[in-house]
Length: 388
Ligand SMILES: Nc1nc2c(c(=O)[nH]1)N[C@H]1C(S)=C(S)[C@@H](COP(=O)(O)OP(=O)(O)OC[C@H]3O[C@@H](n4cnc5c(N)ncnc54)[C@H](O)[C@@H]3O)O[C@H]1N2
Ligand code: MOO
Image 1 (cartoon, rainbow, N blue to C red):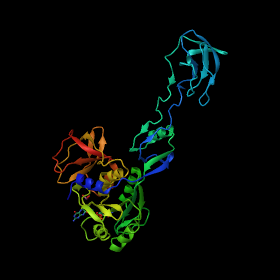
Image 2 (image 1 turned 30 degrees about the vertical axis):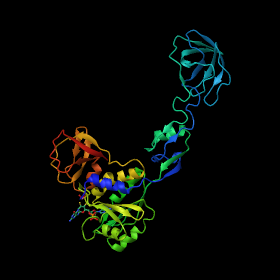
Image 3 (image 1 turned 90 degrees about the vertical axis):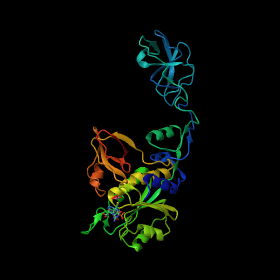
Image 4 (image 1 turned 135 degrees about the horizontal axis):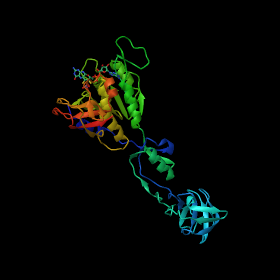
């Protein structure tokens, strides 16, 4: 058995960074920027008014000025403003030549074509300098996950096509005679495939492209048939059949198909019967079948592997720290990922930790990480957790 961090290192060694592809800006949200991009223009491309008001050469109380024209957003004033003159201006409009400040309209009394600067004059100049947000060539550095803010910035930079890392194609294979799909009619000894769907959504949220293959029955032939449907996947994820029982066929069948195994069993709880290797062009990750084990391995191993393939670096699932709301017993020899919930009083570790309990996982928003042989911990002691 190897440690969790050793297992992660071996997984990272198997996970290639995928190639970039160009996508339209609107489809770049949630993707990973693959190459540093540069602004194609200055923003703003001209000195722009920050307010609605009057562009003038100087602002002083009592000045009376003649309004000689108008500058609106998208339509500049063609001439020049001189002493004794003002140009009516609106937010976003180019500031006319000669103007040094914009007096907001609330600080002005207007009478026909003249304005009087009142004693209410606020501080100027209400002008956004050319290139004040960014200049042509300003970089948005890769790699980074593109969210709404970055997309808005790229749009302003006039980057209409964005180089992003190709989405990892992930084939998901559930194994077991006992499984049927949600909505189907299970026989008396059957259950519904569940963690398959949890992992599907986890993969979607990570920016991967998951594909559900048919459930493989517990025979060599059935499992081989489903493996033959893997096609061009970057990663094949199997669920179940990873342990030592007579019907746990995944390691043997994958081995017959040429999988070079990198490891099989990790010193963690839940998730001990975890295996990985390379099969043809694809990386393979064999998850344990117990529903919570599969989902915990999804967060602890699958998510870091997908992020590595996307070019976001080779790092374990991020951890935070919080004080326990109540005490917990000593840990055994395996690193334990305990289902827990964040409360105003601290982090509460649930009493029931059986790796089949999806209802408990559903109530959890954190996994408290206990190192192997960690001693008993009292309320108030700090522990590390992986947010879910
Ligand atoms: N003698 C031993 N028995 C077991 C050991 C062991 O070390 N020695 N390890 C236990 C641990 S830990 C786990 S975890 C399980 C994992 O076993 P498998 O990966 O072989 O999984 P299965 O036997 O196929 O299934 C276990 C359990 O999970 C249910 N299952 C499977 N796939 C799904 C799915 N897609 N959706 C919902 N539920 C699923 C399956 O029906 C079983 O109940 O082995 C222990 N045994
Ligand atoms: O991985 Mo097993 O979950 O320790 O139940």
